[in-house]
Length: 149
Image (tube, rainbow, N blue to C red; front, side, top):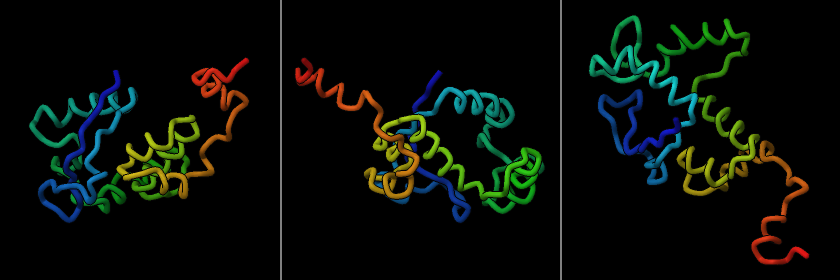
């Protein structure tokens, strides 16, 4: 159950309505992995049926007004309960990128998922999370180009 979601616009804490993304690369297709799709489907039952955004402030039953209310009423407590040191919600982007690279996903794919035009930022910021070449590195080229004896 994997899905691809088009991201043509974005809501920010400074806008009342969705705006064009910051860059052309920001307008992208994001591949939602199975667990993410499942989480969205579960959440959808609470808010989407009412014709609202998927994520809402549960106390006010309307969209969150920026990241401060999320941090103060929800995020900090969740991290404490999980025994995880504090980090702001934006850091989940970095966690996602480093996890994908650690799993061996292609850096250009990760860059596109993140909304970057190319993979140079991925290499610069997350290079240490890219796995070293394994013993099979180069084997594909040998097979494709008939270099293997």
